[in-house]
Every structure is written in structure tokens, then in C-alpha cells.
Image (cartoon, rainbow, N blue to C red; front, side):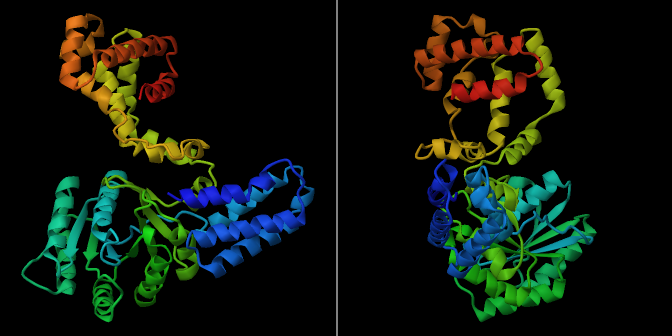
Length: 442
């Protein structure tokens, strides 16, 4: 995400980051390149021009030229202005009302139905809510079926009525159903079109007036760039929505929508979709995104994801096993699963400062642990708990069952033995060290 923009901004700021002489001329030249990078990322030209003008004014006002570290100061100014451009502070979803009614809007293909499921899952797991998904796309039976599939996947109830083509009635009946069945959040997935048209706008406006939602979200495919911004304006003129959701940020997006949309509609980006899985949803933090665009990583988000997967009781049990030298492959497998739940490997690596640039061009496979898992699953329960019993014949059987070579089995056993010894030696800080070693074993 934003790879091209990050590269161009890095090149634009390269002169100022170095130790060469800093002058008003090369500051102006640098900002000209920054503006070009933003326009190439599909940011509106006027927004890009205003952005660089503001940075230049702030730079001259803070005596960048006479600063001991002018390059660092300029990068900070660009980062601060990127943060402001994308909204400044993070804004979560409004959960007032009983039930809270959330109306989803957007074009067909923007990821509205999938995101409705992600939001329901987020509210269920992170906010301990009891959501109800509502199928109000009466034109495509497949859309209703899709929402039911999503609901089954995340174990959230779905309300639909195939007997009527009136989305206003369906939404009103769904809210009544929610009140009667203890649902405290209602997420209404509406119909979309391939382009903005009068019929769609009239329909969603009628739904909005009838149910008066606490939160109206506009879902937009971030890969559509400036077109997404234009569509957002059309929807906002009709609905006066509360916030924006950017989907498909894990794809090859240039970033124009994320950088322009707040300025055009004056509404915050509230959530982003970062993958296909139902837990691939993040609250949008403008400051953290600015850091990632400038190659500074996002350590805070990385730590938060790790903390979400951390179980104190399991950690205590694991510590006892390590102390008694009873750490086995079943325990190791659990640690792998926790790492995988944190998100895609490429996304996680992108949160580490400098890693995105260092790993550019490398294909980071989400199945990085697949070979290790296959080997462990091919072991018997006794072999997993007591790896020392694995002799030559057992290694041959394990390699055959996992589709790997005996050499790969030997390598895993050797690395596992080394890791187990180190973990026992460094009791207390084991979790962090183990994560580092697991990265090396991929």
C-alpha cells in the first residue's frame, strides 16, 4: 500500500535528509517533487499545491535553513501536514442509541457487504456488542446470500426478507427485530450501482430519512483513486454521511483517495480494510498512516495487534513449561497461530521502520509457516511433546507425511532445540526473543 508514493516522497526528500547544504532553492525544488509525487498518486492538483505551499510557509517560519538538522525538520513538517490532510485525529464509530443503527452506503463492488461483516465482527469481538446484519440489496439475490454467508462465518445473525422489494420496510422491520431479540447494533447493507444515479440516491435517501441512523458510513474502493473522491462528494451531498471507510488498502493503491477525501468532503476516514479476512479491519489513524507513507513504520499498531493475541494465562502456563524443559511442538504451534492472527506477513513487516524499503520487491508469502506446520502436523502426539524420540525412521515418516525432505525435518529439529535452550536461559523476556527466532525460522 502506497509503495509508489512512499518511494517518490523518499526520493524527493533525499537531498534534505543528507548532509549537503540546505538552501531556499533546494527546499523549493524538493517541495516541487513532493507535489509531483502527490499528483502521481492521484491526489487532486489543487490539494497537492495547497499542501506544499503550507509546508513551505511552515518551513520558512521555523527557520529550517538555519536548523542543525534541517532535513529531519522538513520530514517532520511533511509528516505533520500529511496527518492534517488525512484528518488529524482518529475517530471511531458512534455507538449511541439503543440499538445503534449504522447505514452502509457506496457503489457496487466497493466492498460494502464484506466490510459490513468486518464491522460486525469488530464490534462483536472488540466492543462486546451483539450486532445484527441487515440485507437491504433487493436487486441482487446473490448479495443477500453473500451477507448470510458472511454472517455464518463470523457467527452474527442476519435479517433478510425475500418477500418484499421495499428496502425501507426491510430496514424498519430489522430494527424492530433487533429490539425484540436483544441486538444492540444494527448494520444495514444497502444496494449499490456501477455508477451514481438518481434512483440509487433517492432510495438510500429514503432509507436514511426513515431510520435516522446514528452513523452513516460511505464505503469506497481505495484503488479507484480520484474517482472515489468524486463519488464520495456525490453521496455526501445527498446523505451528509458521518465518515468514510477505505477498502482494499492491501492492494496496489496509489493513495489518492486516502489523501484527498477528507479535504473534499470534510468527513473523517474512520476505518480501513487491510485484507480479505473478517478481522482485516483497522481504525484509521492519520498520524500512523503518515508514518508508514514516509517509511517510518507503525510500531504502535504492531504492538497493539500483538497485545490482542496475548493471553496472560497461556503465557504463565508456557513459562512453567519452559522452566521445566517441557516446551514442545504443540506449544510452538500455538505461538505460530498467534503470529498468523496478527495479520498478513507483508502488512506486519510494513509496520517495522525501514523494513518496507528493505523488503521492496520481495514476495512475502502469507503461508511462510506452512512447511513448519506441515512437519509438526505429521508428528505423533508423543513426538510433539518429546522431540528427542524422533530417530531416523521417524524423520523419514514425518518428511513423507508433510511433503518435505528429511533435511528440512532435521533443520527444524535443530533450530527448535536451539530455541528451546535459549528460551530457558532468558526466562522473563522469552516472548519477544521467541518471536524474533520464529522470524528467522521461516
